[in-house]
Image 1: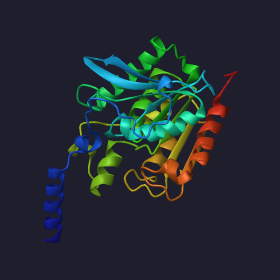
Image 2 (image 1 turned 90 degrees about the horizontal axis):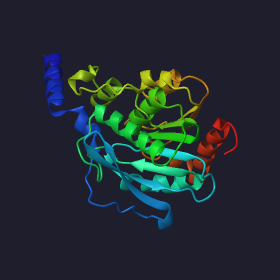
Image 3 (image 1 turned 135 degrees about the vertical axis):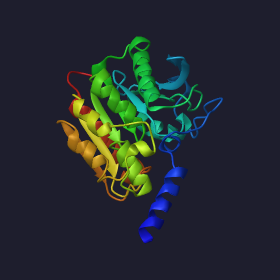
Image 4 (image 1 turned 90 degrees about the vertical axis):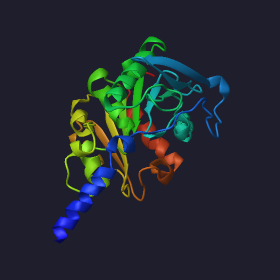
Amino acid sequence: MGKRILTVCAIALLAACELDPFLFNSKQADAYMLPGNAIPDSLIQEVAFQSGPYTLYGIWVASDGGRPGLTLLYCHGNKHGIDEYWDRIQVLHELGTNIFIFDYRGYGKSGGESTEKGLYEDGRAALELLRDEFGIRQDSLIIYGYSLGNVVSIDLAAGQITPLCLFAESPFASATSLAQGSTGLDIPHRWLTKGEYNNADRIKKIQSPFCLLHGTDDDFVRWKDNGRVVFDNAPEPKNLVLVPGADHTNVWETMGEEAYLKAIGSWIGESIKGDW
């Protein structure tokens, strides 16, 4: 009887769950507010570009003169859009590189609706923009993915380009790890999503220096089931920054801005070949 009740409850839970809307917590916007912005307006440029039939939007932030030869492509997480991550962009701007952040289809000002296939197409369109319009070479490009953004960033580094280096903050391993983690049930991911989102497999194909940052107290994308798997599968050279006490959203805050920038900057420095 108890087993039957548990089965019924599980079926009811699954009926109420669907992973894709959970993954794509998007929010449309008519304009970007860039909350708390302290970066000079002269360094900020809004950019529109095409991804398939959709117009996407991004923000180019020029270097303040520190490392103008390097560009960081930031692939943000699943919540809302560029404005939600602007505090992170302001911190990373202290590195002295150029930065480009963009909204996937359905996010911010970007048209369309997000899917796994759409994420890959949007990332590749952003990469094409950086190559063709900004003249960015692959050996001067740093790619940084946060949470859902790792689906985009790892895809780019695994098959589209060999960047200077790749950063992954709080990546999930696959749709299976997310489905089982979000429900607490040993179920196939196909019950909740059509997507694969297989970062753990795709990371094996990268050829760039890799750095992973993950909080030990992340109960949304748990370290042992996700970040650890991605890190173990990544080829050398690689570096792990495991942050005690950090959850899914506050890795850099828990580390402190100085320590966070030192970790990022040091790995970039170790990855550089030649004079930038």
